[in-house]
Amino acid sequence: MKFTKYAKYLGVAALAMGLATGCQTTGSSSAGTSSDTVSADKSLSASEQKVQNIISDAKSALKVAVDGGYAWRDTGKFIKQAEKSLAAGDVAKATSLATKALEQTEMAKKQSIEQDKAVAARFK
Image 1: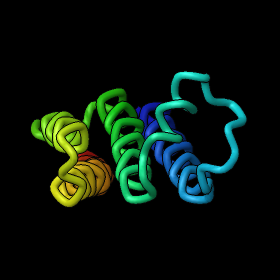
Image 2: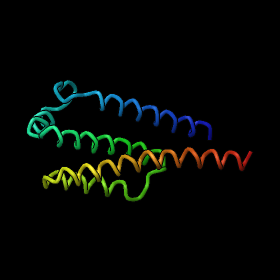
Image 3: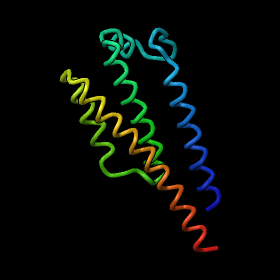
């Protein structure tokens, strides 16, 4: 059980590092990306690129949550809806949905940590 707990914390730390790194990029550098992504990024406006970054952060956070076993039911749906809204050109709706998905992954992570504490306290 201790290994699982530490693996979750390691996943949270990796997510935090990924989010911090993702927030620092400005889009001017194309190091480490495929040519398809670079050409798609150039055609996006600044606000669309910002939404795309939020969506990719939410996807990576959701993957960590699924691997940790604490993902919430609707988070993936919000990500898909955000992608559809962005493709349709509704940047405001896409931003709202992507932010909601990212917030849900953070709340799910907090819920998982609190539940682990409650279970550990109960069965000591």
